[in-house]
Image 1 (cartoon, rainbow, N blue to C red):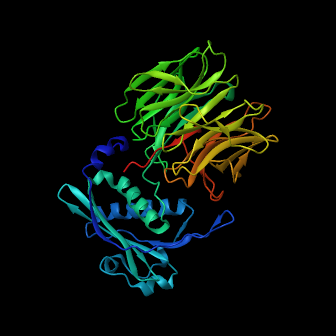
Image 2 (cartoon, helix red, strand yellow):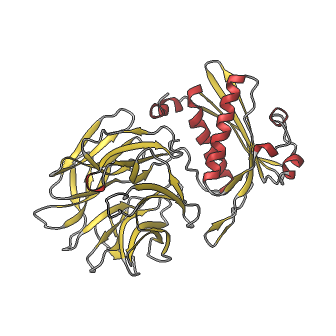
Length: 443
């Protein structure tokens, strides 16, 4: 089944709580490094050979998700002592202590008429306690989605933070020479599965951003290269609508937290410079938020929808500013050297990520919303466009390679990194990639 239609099936998914014990565990963070927690992820047990294969695949997806987070170290299954059949009844904790597993995940899967039931349990090995257990009933083709949902439940129970595995990434797929790249929208699961192109590359697309319900994307398009348009695309139906045609250059539309508005910047010829505007999607009336002789761009809402962050050159260099959504109480928050770009508010509301250029180098950085505790977590010849995971712990962005004298090189690729600056990983895509956006959780 195509992933993009699985959402409808998910409404049929039934969750049964087996048990839940409030038992707080701790993740150790020190100076930008993480000590991964050893965890045993066993194959999900079944007496049906066909269903057993699905159980093994579910186990693999969970293990890969947890390992990719940088917080867990899945133990090689060859080291396991207890078999999955006896484990499905009761774990022998001493067997798991011997291989130094701190946590243990076991599961069962079985056929239930035209559906499958998937059950998992998470144990603290040294405390010899079950931390959580759930059962999901869904269609057989939905096993991958269930794997991500289980991963989220495990991640949240152990770390105390929300999960981020049942999410999607939209980005601009690029191919061709640097001076004439073909760009099209593409979407995939956060683990790079179910990749799909959303546009055909016959026109330029830029800065895709998800709506709060993850079903729609707003983006910039130059179907007519002299006439930029803002579109909204329904991912599930493929239906597309024009939000509007705006005068002059238009930049980076982004949804409000309630999905009812879009913030963007454009240069109205009657104004003469780029300002921040908020467009009401119901009335299609835009309100001008900033009013200065400077260039104001890259607006992003706070998660409560009451404030925005943007960048402006009103002080000479490009800096970050916050303001109320009516444009009042504007305050500069960036204080260090260099120029700041592409700010985006964390879904937790406590931090702002940004791109910074200083001394011939580009950086991805974060700071608190008042500008304090600024720190860089990634750098490269050209790195840009941070976007937050829904739990506010990880960032996606893209890097562009240098172009050689013969014109080769210059490819762009997506990367992810932990908020601490640890665990940077390249995201594998069929083509080059830029301008990523991370969806909210799908469940």
